[in-house]
Image (cartoon, rainbow, N blue to C red; front, top):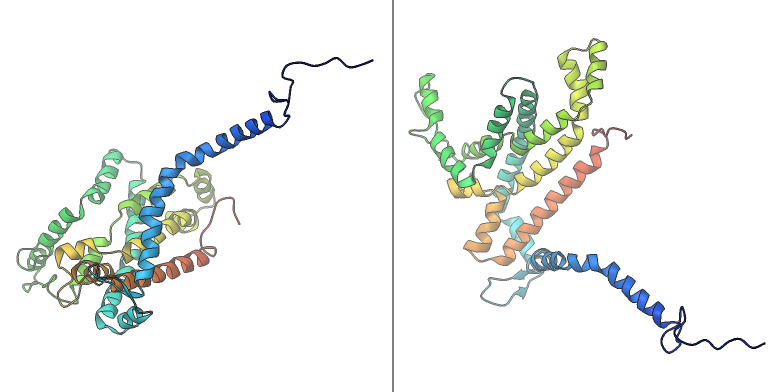
Length: 319
């Protein structure tokens, strides 16, 4: 008995009887479907390559060159790094920056935590107080600089006026003294701001059961703070510490607007040194080398913080 002759397209067969044609078409459609999300990500990827990856690699290359924008770059190897290490202005800017970081970062964490603790107390008008606490962080740097100049003015400033009322007739030259001027910016930087908001979110996530257990055990408020609240806030402390460190190393706008780095380099921070080399003296090679030195210093500190965080950061449900 012979099998009947099949006519027309059969399942799994193409128009010409090719069994692979529909399968290839299905595989192509599946491939296009899988590639569609990457197609939507393509503009972002191009932007990252154009505005982030390329400038980073370009600055790394130019850190080994003499380059002033107007002439082609000339390869000089490590000479930029050696010259910068030998210059007094680099060491002075680094010293000012490290003093600023060492004092302002812990100070900002403490102030932010204290503000968060105060704003976590249930009182009438709490939302208003929280809003007022966030207002200083919304003021543009230029506006804040004008206010700070008025407050610390040697002649008519608010600080010296208060000191005179308290019996100190001789006012301090806060902004014209090379030693005192950096402390003006340190005090300016020590505020709650975003850190306070992060701590406040952390306080609201502490389980109430822990406070109830501490109360049953007879713990006082200060004991509860150190045995319950602060350990539960350590992940938020780590986040605030890292962001504060990175921000402090990038200190630039306020001293540039208020003192221009003076007097006698007393308020010249590392960020301003990079700016002046790049856009005032057009020493792009020097500026690139300075930037990479700052990057390496920041990364070493950030990695050290991460490596040591396992010994003091507590994650709920973790080890």
